[in-house]
Image 1 (tube, rainbow, N blue to C red):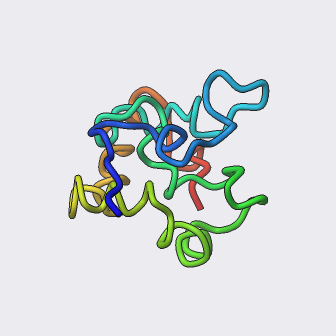
Image 2 (image 1 turned 60 degrees about the vertical axis):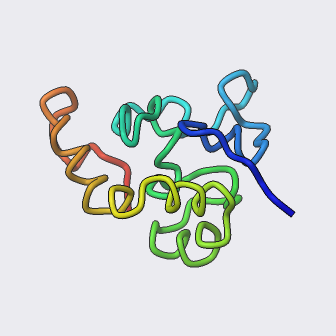
Length: 113
């Protein structure tokens, strides 16, 4: 069995999430400005695994706990790892956010962990 993914897809497209941008109750990643541009995504669409409070977990949990319980087995997370490799790690993500701090203020405003 082969699964074909398109480059640049958003998390909600890959996992057929009902909380995409057209939803009445969109996921927090849809409007998560801090992550805009990370791995070529719009807002948090390609960084959902680093964003707390997503509907796929059913509740707000810490990022390390989320990664361990949900993301490592997620088709989207695995897709990103294959496409982006080391560029998708938390250090590159935080660097991306840090580079955008002029737009947002301080890291304390970042709802990450």
